[in-house]
Length: 253
Image (cartoon, rainbow, N blue to C red; front, side):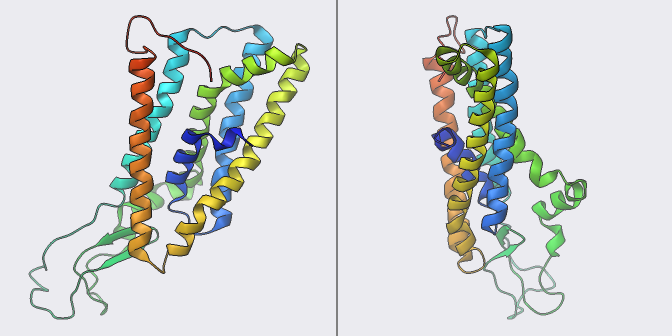
């Protein structure tokens, strides 16, 4: 459960759950993240324990670098989904006093454009927002909302599996008990991340529908934090630890 609170984990899931409306859905996102994380930790960590697999420093750094790139991508995608659609009144609506502009939301997509509240004066259908199009494309498959946290958990699991396996080998020599330790570790991570995501989602769920502008500010803030933290990790791993240099230095952590 303590492992679930690592800064890169919290930043990633905070960016993801910023769209969730309920504590239950946010907790489910955390559980899916934990499942993806547990699968890779068990598979990769189990291979290290059972078959004495040695991960080269450059490969280990590359797995951690993938986390940095993923955080940057999550932040960018979150911001891209919130791009405000602005512009002047259309030719048909110019001078119409019923048209106005303010922030409003369509199923989590917050934006602004001139519109009215009379029938046919909104400017676009709720199904025509970018997120609604994605939902229409992938929602029927049942993987759109579940794939992202699982993939994020898998990437985090790859980055941390070596450190966990080495920790286990230092204290448990029997491979069977060591693998069981990995499974218990994964179970604790799942529970911990479910609690964390539910707690993180509280301000988003409260602001949704009540304070649309503040809800948007919260989402922008989490996106920027994700991008900046990803850039920081990329610098630490790529430059300081030498992934992009000739002599990479890797200490699993």
